[in-house]
Image 1 (spheres, rainbow, N blue to C red):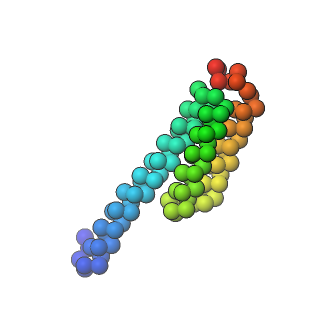
Image 2 (tube, rainbow, N blue to C red):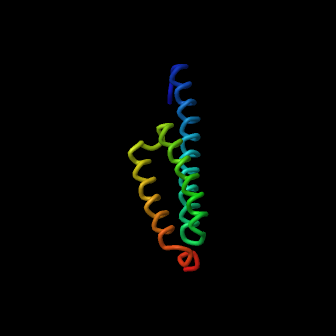
Image 3 (cartoon, rainbow, N blue to C red):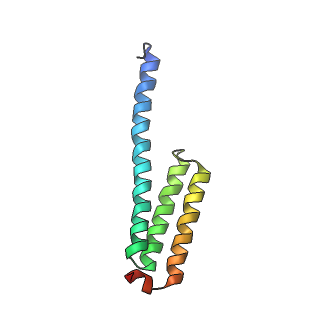
Length: 96
């Protein structure tokens, strides 16, 4: 347990930041799941819109230091490849 006033304050700050960072990470994961859902069951246009939204959230998460910038770039690259594959497959893949 922290004994000094400044150590107690640091514990409070860490708890608050941890809660915010968990929220940011959860938001990012939800956006990626939404994109995956659109890739599986939506149209290519819906997938593209979800991709733009997911990229924005991934960039914000990396900008805040919750995930590393290279990790964010890797996620976006892999998602981009999936979206391009969906667009190339055409409307027939939306029914499958």
